[in-house]
Length: 504
Image 1 (cartoon, rainbow, N blue to C red):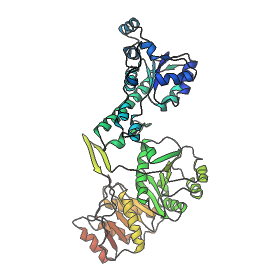
Image 2 (spheres, helix red, strand yellow):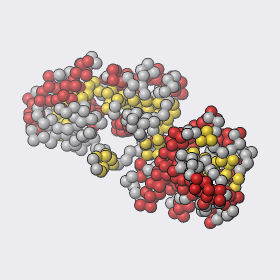
Image 3 (cartoon, one colour):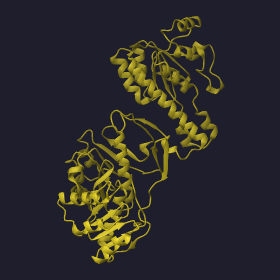
Image 4 (tube, rainbow, N blue to C red):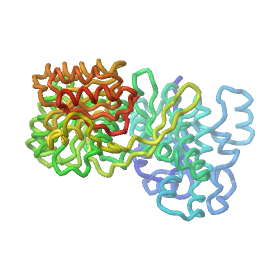
C-alpha cells in the first residue's frame, strides 16, 4: 500500500543535507512541523513551518529537555488510520496526523570522544529523538521514518519520482534502519555508563552493508574505517571486502618499519603473492609472479606510496582493492580509470588487542597474535646463511597470516608458493611446491615456513627433495628430533621459534 505524505515532523541536530528535502516538501505542499533551531533553519530556506508549541499548547521547557514528548505529537505518529477507535480519539482531541518523521539524534558518541565533562556528555543523551524514531518505525504501516542523513538523497528521489508517495516495502526498510540506529545509539550510552572497553571498537559507528558474506545474509559493520584508511575511489566496501582488507592491513602492518618496498596480493584473506624489493613497481611484479592466476580480482597492498610506473602495470590486472599509504597524482589518474576499483589511503592503522569469534551458544575471546618470533634457535645441520635468515623471517610472517595448516615457500624475499587450509600439513607442503613449479619457479635454495610443528620428518624430506635448504617452525612435537636429525644428516638449516601461529 502506497502512502501519500501530507504532514512531516522534522527535528534534527545536524541540518546538513536537509535543504533538498525541505525544497521538495515545499513544492509538494506538504505541511511541516518542527521545533526550535530546526524550525528556524527551515524558515530560512523560505518554507513555512508550524511550531510544535502551536500544536501542543505547551512551551519548550527545562532548557530544551522537553519539546516533543506530548500526546498531541505522539498520538499523531502512532495512530492507526484504519482503526476506527483511533481516528475517533484523534478527532476528539484535535490531533494532527503525522505521516513523515525525520530525526537526527544528538551526537552522543562524538561528544564522548571530544570531552570528559560528564555534564556535557549527559546533555547529549537524546530522549525525544529516539522516542519519535521508535514510534514512527513501529507504525511503519502508516508513517515513513528517516533516521540517517545517508538516506536523505534516496528519500528525496523517491518523493520526486513517486510524487510524494512511499510504498509499504520502502517504509518497512526505513523503519528497520531507524530501529538499527536506536539500538546502536543505546549501545553507545550503555557502553559509556558501564565503562566497557572490551566492546568499544564495535560500538563506535554502525554501517549497514549491502549484504553479508553471501547475498542472502544481512551484514552490519560496527566501527569507523576512517580511523585506519580513507577511501579515495571506487564502489562501497562490502562485507567480504572489509574482511579481506583487514587481513591485508594486518599483514602489511608487520612491515610498517621496513625501509624497502613490500607488496602483497591477497585472495579470500590468504596472501597469494608477496615480495620485498627496492621499488614499488619491482615489488608488485615480484608479488604477481608468485601466483598470477589467483591475483585476478584480489586485494593489493603496499607499505610505500604508489608511483605512476607501478600504477601503469597494476592497471593491466583486474583487482578489487588497492591500499597504500599514498598515491602519486599521476598514479591516481591511471588507477581511477576503472570506476569500481576501490582505492584506500592507509592512515593510522589500529587493531584491537583481542579477537572475538562466535560459537554455538556464546563467544570466544582471545588476545591477538602479535608475536612473530619468541626465540631463534638454530637446530639443523648448519647455521642459516644471511640470505636464508632474511627469507626465513619473511616466510615465518607469511605463515603466521595464512590459514592453518600453513606452509610458505620463499626464495629471495619472494613468496613462490604456499599451502593453507588443508587438513594435512603434507598436503599444504605439496600444494606450495606444486604452486611454485606451476608458476615456473626453481625451488632449489628456497626456504619453508610453517605455522606449527612438523609431527614427523616427512615434510622435511619432501621439501628437501624439492630443493628446500632451510626451515623455520615453532617446534614442540614429541618427535621434533626426527626432523632435526634429518636436517643434520643432509646439511639443512632449521630454526625453531617456540611460537605457534594457528589461524583457523
